Amino acid sequence: MNAPVSPPAEFGVTPLQTIASMTGIDFIQAMLAGKLPAPPIMRTMGFTLGKAEKGSVEFQAIPSFEHYNPIGSVHGGYFATLLDSAMGCAVHTVLPAGVGYTTLEFKVSFVRGMTVDTGPVRAIGTVMNAGRRTALAEAKIIDMKDRLIAHATTTCLVFDLPTGSPAKE
Image 1 (cartoon, one colour):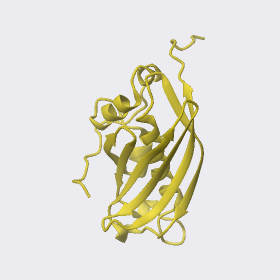
Image 2 (image 1 turned 180 degrees about the vertical axis):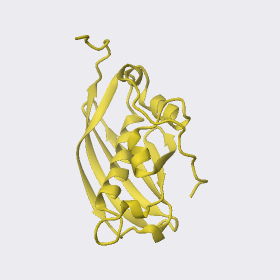
Image 3 (image 1 turned 30 degrees about the vertical axis):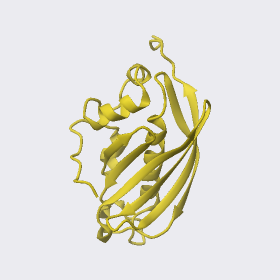
Image 4 (image 1 turned 90 degrees about the horizontal axis):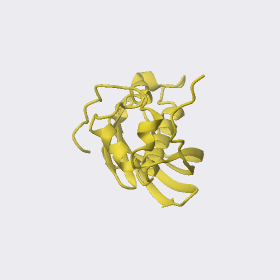
């Protein structure tokens, strides 16, 4: 695994006009560089963006007690959030300026459980196909020994972002 990535100094939501003005890869890389805020979900879930290339992203996380379900292991929603984030951001990296996406559906396969003893994990998202209206991606969570923890696939809807100024009421 790469050296740990420092958490971003700022969390927030980038204005839609800013997002629409950038290519997807430029947007994700600006977030990675700290030029744009990281989304609040990253603070809530305790993960960081470690890499971003066209068609691929990597998040890093360390599962903790706060992520546990009632039976003493990391909740499946934690897995799903990491995987959905990796797949969605990977899709975003291949989009031109003015184009956005949203998850239509995703499927998660849990291969092994996670606990605090699992240690650091990586969620790696990769675009499989990006078309004009849909994109397909996959992601995997792996541990420090490169063992597969979970795998997911997604279909995302691709659409034009509104680029005008917001309506005033």
